[in-house]
Length: 390
Image 1 (cartoon, helix red, strand yellow):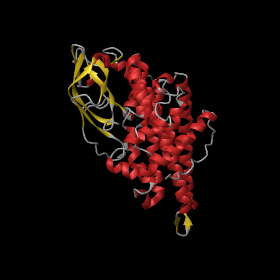
Image 2 (tube, one colour):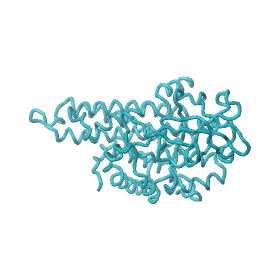
Image 3 (tube, one colour):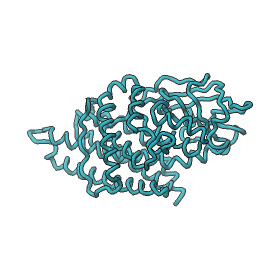
Image 4 (cartoon, helix red, strand yellow):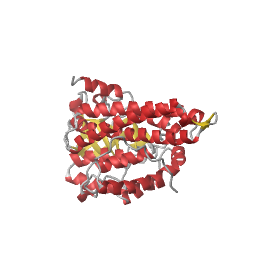
């Protein structure tokens, strides 16, 4: 079964990023999300995670880790393919799958900083869906302050002994492996003692909490992870001891761009959904779309969404050249996620009472999209980082 999703309103300024190969890939991705994810929203929400076999299906279609080199199971393509995956996920209102984190965050850490042995061990399995990856940064009480983490990895012969816990971990409940942020060496230090370890989720002492009950994104697999004297081989260290914070900073700009990409597409989808609704819904014998207030609100939202689209696409051009600045990524993340919340709120208003009913996509978007302003670094942190360059 597939779900029919409204076509986005035509852009005022045509997009120039994609070629015919990209668009052929988009067709496959769109069919997958409309067939395998969107029809099962209520099921995912009830069980608080997608079915494990969906990961294998995505892997079989080449939808996981497409940017990874071919020798590790990927397709070796550019990040526009990742962008397409994120846009199509947002287009159907899917907030349950954690594919982008798995493919464009976790896999990148291993590919960019791992040894040949680490790449060969993990990346092919991540590409096929045999292994689900997560990254464990946030801890209770630390939030965005990664320098203050308390999870420790104490050297013991050829191993580390890991103790601590993490919270709000996407893909945590189903993960087979996690890149875990730990303190090594002088654990009283700040950023200079932060390291990254690859941890097999089947290792004794590695346990998972139940999926966390969230306001929105309730179908997404999010949980706590606990480490009780977990013995991890030193060969699982990514890069060198004390280099973790630097590695995290190098990848954060792309993580923030990912949020901006999803939010820009989410805004376009919210508008398209609302246009369909107001053209059909009648009030006082007239369609809602015939009222000037409705037309003006739609004009405002379409204009603002187009501004966001142009900025995000321009940032992607910089990503492809490896020239995207930290400030631009922060600006894209905070401004477009703020805009998405604003647009969704306006769209709920145009739906009237039905906008507050969960069977309508706009109501689900209302609760699902709020988290974009929090994760990846809160929008207040984004403004602080931008201000430092002024």
